Length: 311
Image (cartoon, rainbow, N blue to C red):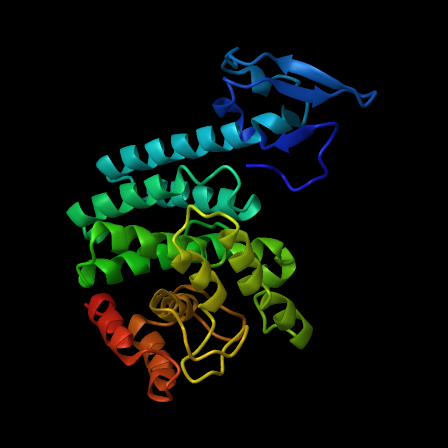
C-alpha cells in the first residue's frame, strides 16, 4: 500500500488508486513550498469525481495511521474477494489475491497480521465447496509482477495438495500461510533481479539467495506465526541431498519440503523464459522427477502432487 519513496515529515506516500479506501483517515499533500497541507479530515468522504479534477499528484497519510490504513485496505480486499467467489468472478479473486500479496511484499508483515489468516480461510473454505476454483486461479495470468503472481500460484497449488491429503482446517491455514509468505524475503531484493527473464549472473544469484534468510528473520520477529512459516521461508530452497541453500542442510521441515517442491514446479509450468517456454504439467513434473530420483526431493510428496495436479 505504501510507495517505496522517502518518508516526508512524518507522512507516508500512498497509492492514488487506493484513495477510495481512505475516508476514515486524514489525507495530506505537499505544496509547492514543500509544506504538508491537509487535503481532507479523517471521516470526511471523498466525493465521487473529485480525483478527476486538477488535484495533487501524490497524497500522504500520517505515519501513525499506516497500520490502520493497511488493515482497512486488506479487509476491503478480503470482502471483495469473498463477493467475487460467490459470483464466480475468478479474475477478480486472483486480482484481490495479487493485491494482498503485493501489500505483504511491499511492507513485509507490518499491519497485515490480522487479515492474512482471514484471506486463507476465505479462499480455502470456498475452494472446498468449489474445487475447480483452484484450477481456474492458476490458469489465469493476472499480469502482476512475477513474484506476486508466483506467490498466488504457489498458494493455490498448495491448497490443491492440502485438499488431496484431507488436511484439517488448522493444517490448511498453516500450509496456506507458509505458501503465501515463502518468498516474502524477496521484498529486499533488487526488482531488476526478480523480474529478469534471462539467466541470472553469479552475482545476481548470490543476491537472490539472501531472500531466504531475510524472509526468515522478518517472519520470526512476529510471534503470531507458527514457527513452520518462518522455517519454510528459510528452507524452501534446501534439498534433501544437502545441495540446496542457504545452509545446505538435509534436515528440512516437512512444510518446507512441500512448498519447496511446489515452488520449483510453478515457474516451469506457468512462466515463459527467454531460454524456454512454459511447460505442460507432465513435462514440468518429468524435470522434477529427475531430481526426485537423485534424492533432492521427498518422493512421497512428489507422488501426491502428481496425483492432484495431473487429472
